[in-house]
Image 1 (cartoon, rainbow, N blue to C red):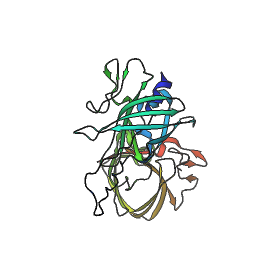
Image 2 (image 1 turned 120 degrees about the horizontal axis):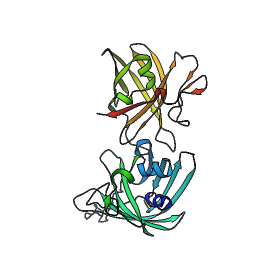
Image 3 (image 1 turned 180 degrees about the vertical axis):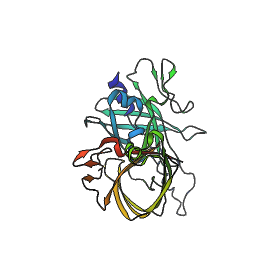
Image 4 (image 1 turned 90 degrees about the horizontal axis):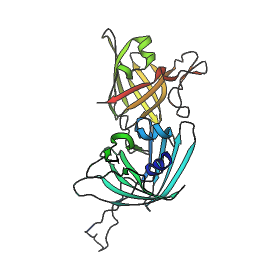
Length: 309
């Protein structure tokens, strides 16, 4: 069952070409617009479907969808083992909704057909849900545009979020960090709770690369930090590098990593100038929890989770 399900969920996404009735001034029909799904997409962290996390320990999916209706998907599990899936697809629009129906013909590593739905929203995020239909998986029926995401069923019972996969573009046209984010309760980094009694952080990252962070402790005392930031992408992961040049209340530089998913922001940085003896910042290659003290990874200690406002 697990093997069949993974083929279903990685079968593919699709591309749609929309016809144009008008002609240009030379009397020729311009090419149809390219579907926004064409390109490379990444799913990590909270974006990975719960069913994949539970059954296959999936931690990352990198999916590339080509304009010639072929696709290539690389899935990585928690042991860093990878499986590549490829094939072709077709797509059908549905009246009154931006959710599209897709039929997927996987050829590697095995031949299966899957059906389902997908949608690229106004923020440029991709939502995707399919299930294997040939060979059929007994009891399972694919989701439909009419019933929406979460409508994959087992013996007639909708499975909700279980097989919904979310993706962010690998090469976004905008900085998804921009906006206001709030961290409180269990989302506050354990290290901040224990050392500074932090209970809430409101962080605003602006499109002009300035930021403001307001940290409030358990006594309701707030401190505001401001400065500028720069970011850098890393190949094959949605984890990005960030450098912060704080100007108030003191001048310091911090470095680290962050990841924006369709649900949240995961963020981990450490002061680097003036350096804190023994500490080294986290890296995208080692992932979250890789801040080190005397070469020992500190795990969740400095991992901060935010929810967008």
